[in-house]
Length: 469
Ligand code: ASP
Image (cartoon, rainbow, N blue to C red; front, side, top):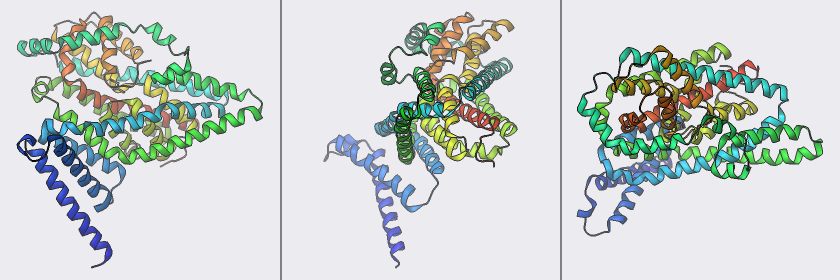
């Protein structure tokens, strides 16, 4: 037997044994296996599970990274459904993955933006900044509009049975009150003022992206005004940091299939199907709207850049899967930047400017979700919203998306502001909190797709898109 074949047989045997051991141990009640402590058995079954996955994904088959992440996601859904709460114990693996990408965000954004803005003329920066904001604002308003149209046509909230309504309000009222309290602390003027940091280190250590972006751009511009011999060492230092962060992204992304697997398995395992059924219409409408948005980007990208629709959709897949499983545009940011630069040919200075801004300012998916949700809650409470109230929703939802972190559940906080503006009782939040996690996954996916589309469009309008396919 050739050596290669022997190795393959060995891998297959290891896969078979570890897969069987893990399936067996996840299917039984560990307490009944008396001869080993439960915690040891938990460790054994998790180790067997990940060994089986590693063998199949890394050794037996040669699979592209996108497909590996996708397989991780599908296996995660299956494991969550089949093994329920016992699989939830692998969540730390998912958390580890999120922590590893999150650790890169701040140094990456700071270094790349500083170097990027030092290499651009102030005129170009102003032009790109203006284009970026206009693109983001128009697309966000469009997204809320689509959400409102869908909710007006399909009326997801009318006819929700009274017992389901009362049940949801009772079950989630405490959580709803907590969220509204948090949201009340955010006032739009303060949000804008907070873009300017008082203490950079405070912003760095709290991971506040907008003040960091502001400071990095300002410092980048200042460096261009210094004599070359003074600016150069600072710039090469940050260039080095930037390159090192990109190397880390490349390493961490290899871990993505396992992280995604663990995150999704945990979400699915903890999710009640009853609530899913009672809010099915609302969920289907929101997701349909988000899917529509997803397919609205490629034509726009094609129009401005000539990039084939398939190239854009295929290119963004890895970042989308990570957004889907982390529910955080910010956590996905390093991968979005890498994808836009490596796969779609966006130059680094534009990507490092447009994308971090997008991760906090541009939330198209969230905006659509807010449109549908505001109307859904109004319909359940039988509040008739006039056209002007609905226009106010477009305005407030668009504005509320600025300055809110690209973090899980951020969209709900913003929704409270929108509800208050049009006089819908914020307690209504309790109606939708049960499916919030699932919808967050979908809307975050769209949020980062919107950011990436902007990066490609803006690079193309500057005549700087490197890859034309
Ligand atoms: N999780 C979303 C994001 O990070 C924001 C939201 O909650 O809608 O983009």
